[in-house]
Length: 363
Image (tube, rainbow, N blue to C red; front, side, top):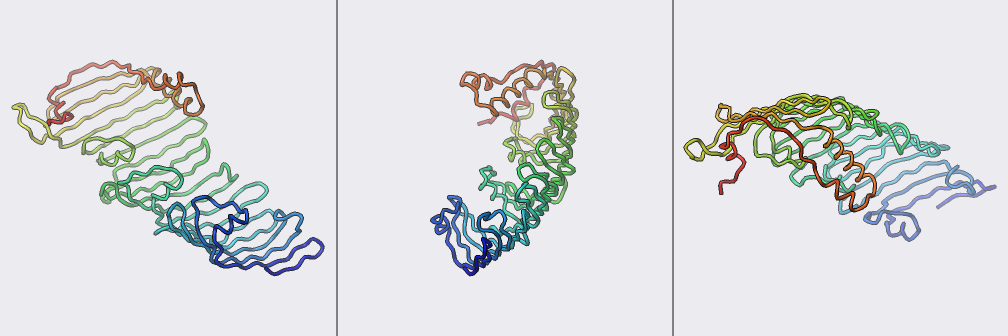
């Protein structure tokens, strides 16, 4: 530490090497519990009135550090400058495992308004577990992104694109998205998912002022990928084209879904064999209900037709009650009532019982 103090004005330069996080804790500097590391190099110079430290202090800092957080190894290096209320980050770089994140831009200390550029390259997706997010064990992927963060730091507007590449249960996948996000304002300009280099899913939409609009198109989407959403379906492929618009309390859905698979079942003689199976569904809603018309085909012969009408009101009320119980602490009695899922539907049609063999374990 070198410097001088003249009439309450401090001019100083600090240089330090190999400062352990335990030393920072001993000095009363807050450090996350599971963060362990070493500041390998720190150089700083600053100038300003001591009585207004650090609000009116201006200066520069350059730092290098390495360590681990929750057993994830990282390194950090970067430069920052403070001039009045403006903090400017120059070429800040964080490396974690095989990926890297870069941060540049400015943050206003007094208003918390930000204008930052964040770029990531091949960051392992499992780093999200550090934030408490659950990632399927079978999903092995890396994330790259180019993001612009603007506005108040507590409610920023985030604009940019994100890409993910890797595999899920040995299926190679690549996902690209482009859009912007702010509380109650989401614009999904483009989402594309590909497997084995072939596009299988695309989507675009928006959510603003409690209203949403979404268009989704799928073409031969492997059902195994649905396991990332917690949906486990026998191996096959989905195709779909769905439009949804409205509000959570009054959604309107129209479209079609097709599921095709080669499933193990029984023929008319009771012999076990692999049989072509398809389930084609048309969806539409009106003011009162969700209507589903489906045709089930096995070995190119229609084996069932069903028309299902589900009233919207009880399910929307259930969803609203469930959401409210999540947002607020309710009594045990009211929480119990939200777990009673309503069952209310009218079904017309016929169903070949042989088709049940696709869904019953013969053992």
